[in-house]
Image (cartoon, rainbow, N blue to C red; front, side, top):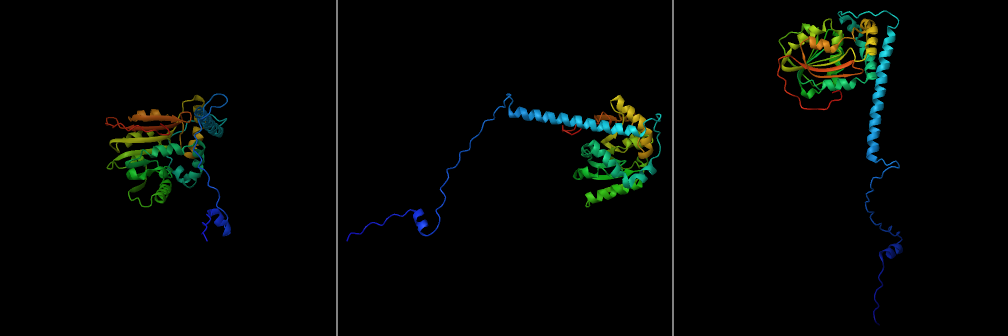
Length: 310
């Protein structure tokens, strides 16, 4: 009897006979299609819309910041509203800051948050390199912004012993393994002249010195050749109405915080003999950022960088 050929069974038939469900049908790979950017109904491309949104956000942010700063100074004006103008006289503020040390961060932190000053502190702290001296270190509000890898040694100085203790605690918490830090409770003008520094940093400190011009003149003698002094200060602004507010409330603020916030920072720096390399002003001109060097020093040009405040 002739042998019949065996029937060919498809895999799906075999799987069905064995009780297994057939596999799902293979899908064809989808071709990646590139959709060309379309213009909106008014003829503006997506790139142009993105650029416009960015400009709008920057403008709105600037206006909002100006409103906050104006409101801050106007509220400060209310502290002395109605009273006669009284000049804030220079005085030794050591006891004032000893008394404020424990609550200083809570009070000043609120003001700095209101004005966004952490961005300014962060940028000036980047300038601290080599052997560093921070004058009027306060409670160490710049400590967390330091680039410690570029700092060979650092000395913190403040006339208030209570403030220096706060700085020391913060520094040790942030950099527990760093071994080249020193903390001195003394006035800047009483520092010995035997040690020299590459960078001298001071933030919101000139307003608290009895003679800020003399302090800057003294600090120049502590600089190494080619060293720099970096300042972040508040003082007189570029708007008359702001300066009137500062003048009106200067005496009362100095009484509470030991700070004469209506000083002309640029005039003080120039009278000290320092040569200004960079100067920037913000918050209606009341926030001053200055990098300066001693007259006669040869300064190498710094590489061009983009800073938040420059």
